[in-house]
Figure 1 (spheres, rainbow over the protein chains, first blue to last red):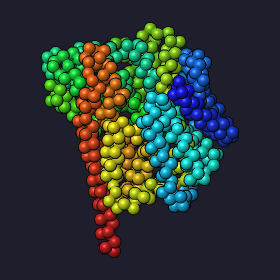
Figure 2: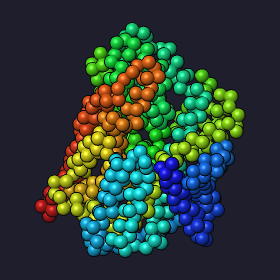
Figure 3: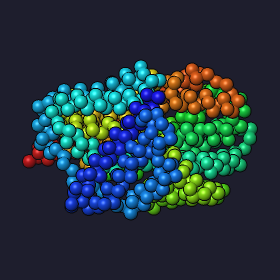
Figure 4: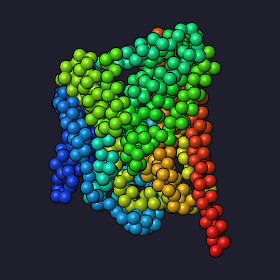
Length: 318
Length: 233
C-alpha cells in the first residue's frame, strides 16, 4: 500500500521536472520550437504525474484511461518524428566556475554522490518488501539532494534549472524504453513470438545436440535483439527451441535454461531496441553517435560471450 | 508470417535512420492491425504498457542531485583525483569498475547505473586518466572512452545479476521452467549463473586493456616523434 503510494509519488516528481521544462520553454521568447516543445514535455509530464494519480491515496479507479494515454503517445511520436522537440540555451555554470568550485569544495563534493548510491542500497536491502527499490532510489535522491545543497550552497533555482537541462539533453529518447516495452506487449498480444519460434523450428534438424545448442543460444540472442528484452524472448524461445532441441536431448534443465537466458543478454548488448541500456546512455554520456555509440563497443564482447555460451552449454549441460 | 511486418518496419526504420520513436509506434500500430486488433485496442495496449513501465524512466528522479553536483565541479574533481594517480589508465580504471560492478550485481547490491555512477564518477575519472597520460586526445578516442564507459555498466549488470537468488532473471527461469514442466530450485539456477559472471570479468577486462594498448601505441608513438623533432632542433 505504502509502497504503491510512494512509488506513484516518485512518478509525480518526475512529471514535475517535465512541467518545469514546459514553464521555462514557454517563457523563452527565443526558443526555436517553443509551442511544440512545451506540448511534448507537458504531455509526458501529464502521463507521468496523473496517469495513475489515484494510487497516491489508494484509489485505483482515479486514473487516465489507457486508451487516452495511447493516443497521447501517438501525438508525442508525431512531434518527435517532425523534429519539433528542441532545446535552447541552458543557464549552465562556466568551465572556470566549475574548476574553481572543484578546488574550493574539494572532496566533500563526493559525499552526496556516494550517499545516493549507499542510501539507495541500504534502503533497498532492508526494506525491499515494504518500499521496493524504486522508492529506495527516491529516498536516496532526496537525501543526497539535501546534502548537495548544503555542501555546495546551491539554490533551488539552480536545482530546477539543472534537472531540466539534463532531462532536455536526453530529450525524447527518455521515453524510448517505455515505448519499446509497449511495442513488446503489442507483439505479444499479436503472437509474433510463436511465429518466430515455429520458423526456427522449421529448419533445425532433430537429433543433433550441437546444432540444438547453437539454435537455442543464437535464437535467444536474435529474438532478444528483436524484442529488445531477453525476458520477453526467454519464455517463447525456451518453449519453442530450448526444450525440444536441447533439454529433451538430455541436457540439465537448470544449466541449459540459465545459460539460455544469459545468451539472450548477448543479444541485448547488440540491439538499439534495448534503449534503456544502449540508447539512453548515449544521451546521458553525451556521445555523438546516438544509435550505435555504445553498441559498437559491445558487439565484439557480445559475440565472444555468445560463442562461450554455446561451448559452455554443450560441454557443461550434457 | 504477415505478423512479422512490425519487425520489418523497425529494421527498415533503423537502416534509413528515421526517428526511432515514430518508427516504433508505427510498427506497433501496423502489427496490431494485421493481427486483427482494433485501433482502440492497440492504443489501450500501448498506453497501458507505457504507464506500467514508467519505472524504466525513474532515473529522472536522480537528475536534480546529479545536475547540482555537476554545476559545482563534481566531474572536474573526479578527473583531478584520478590524474594524480600515475598508474591509472582508461583500461585499468574501467576494468576495476567492471569487477566491482559484477561482484555487486552477483550479491544483489544495487550499485551502479549510467546516471548515478558512470556519468558523474567513472567517465570523468577515465577521461582524467586518459588526459593525464596522453594529453589532449583525438575526438574519436574521446568517443571511444565514453562508449566503453557506457558498455562496462552493461557487462557487469547483465552477466553478474543472475548469481543473486532473488534476481528477476532467476525468478523468471524458475517460473518459465515450471510452466514447461521442469521443477528447478532458485538456488540451483543462481549457481548455474556463476561461470558466466566470472567469464565476463575476464572478457571485459581484455577488451579494456586492449584499448589501453591501442592508446599507448598511438600517443606514445606521437610523443616520441615530437621528442625526436625537438632533439633535431
